[in-house]
Length: 206
Image (tube, rainbow, N blue to C red; front, side, top):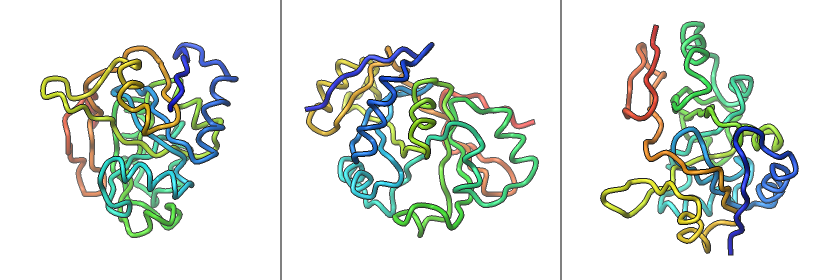
């Protein structure tokens, strides 16, 4: 049975953030708000938690395209190869924001992702998930929670999310109604930025 915790985005309560981080450190799965849709996440250093998410998403863990939620760009060099100055400036212009940037991964990626050449980086414009990452001390892995509904692709109501995910995750954060448009995905591994998925974010390339 998952528990539900209400956290306010304007001023997240540090005690509540600590409770969330305790769940993550014990290998728990959480559903949390971002600046786009609600995400399913865990600590990127916990292999068994990562395996649980892969099982839920019905993908092989080493093939999974999960994003890393970072607090800011200071985490970048931990997981990303050295990038050019124009690429870094592009990231700075657009983050925090509703984007997933695909970047070349380095050798420090968690063991389960060692075979992957790239990593998706997110710095959402949402105080709750960034406070969680800050308290945890490393990124959380993230994947959107999809809905089977043909009209509404993403569930936006935290109480409905809890109802649906109650037996699959350990904690659902109620950060208010979520959005139903996912992030814009931009591939920065080539010579020019390439938009892989049009989403909420409108990219500033210049």
